[in-house]
Length: 155
Image 1 (tube, rainbow, N blue to C red):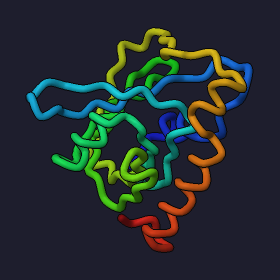
Image 2: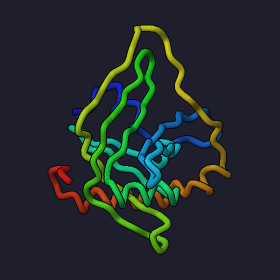
Image 3: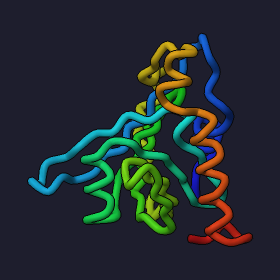
Image 4: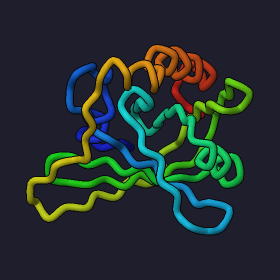
């Protein structure tokens, strides 16, 4: 089950010319070391009670997910960092495998807090970022992925 704060942070569309949060997706590479993939809200969405969908265009992250199917998503809120343990379910590949949309089941969520204010990592969005990240293509791909999961959101 996704905490309400996580759902709120992952919800909504990314906006041009605004400061947008960065979410970190960690996987394990073939060499056994952690890998980090930075995601924006234009590349991620959450669906209650416990599904997270992402679009990935990072070749090493795609290879890690195909090999292992697990990841950890870091979401930073007002006073807590959340670590979501993810297991890949439904996937859609495009662009000859250079783009992968993945539905993850959230297997566990850990909240890390001392009750002090936090600021998430952010980036300045722009029309360039919108085009580079292919925001409109991502929304369409995430919608297609959601439809492959079934009406009840299960993967």
